Image: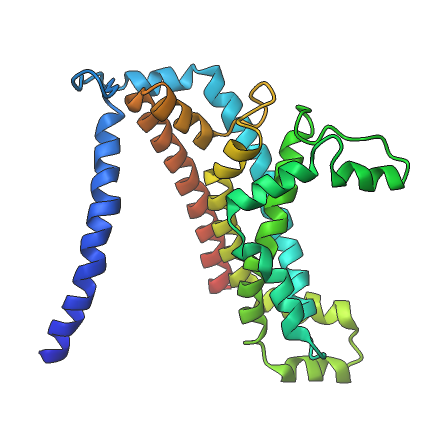
Length: 285
């Protein structure tokens, strides 16, 4: 009984915080999505009008296209490159802790600072174009070209996220028995065979976890766009979350912004359930 009371006490604090900062705001946002609330006028119930407007809003679908492009560029790269990085720093060699720290260091840097730094590097006379000039390649319009802006933002995200996802894979790698690799050595398996037949299959749950987390992060990314491009040029880097920010805090259209938020929530939920289904199927196999 004594332990049960303490357990409920410890659970009560995060439960209250979850209620105040997550559950109540979520319910309030769901309610607002059925209104035309704009801060200055009373709440007016409009039913499904915001959702009907959303379906016919070309700006929303353009923002969704940009979000999907960003997701396709970022999530596969973070999922695959982080595995190879983890495999490299999982090897027994001198100074491996230093390498791990170096690769993890970008994670410790604020997103705003990272965005400002890369914005400077992507300038017309910045370091990136200087590096291209060494190889006689014409300067690129990293953040001012409609076709280049999303890949440029993806480069920054991948640079900062590699170390973070590397840690998950590193934990997974260290749980794999060394005996499996020793047995593979006796069979004459090379480096790549060991990775394909031992490492990747046993890391599959971690891979799915990384896919889910990086997918949610990609769909929610906002700071990078606000700091580096402000959704430009000509809306080509405006994502769904950036559009929510514009509608809610610049145009004060809280009702429509809430409707967009719930549409995004449903999309992320569907993608997460699909990933979960694959994971369950894999665990049952």
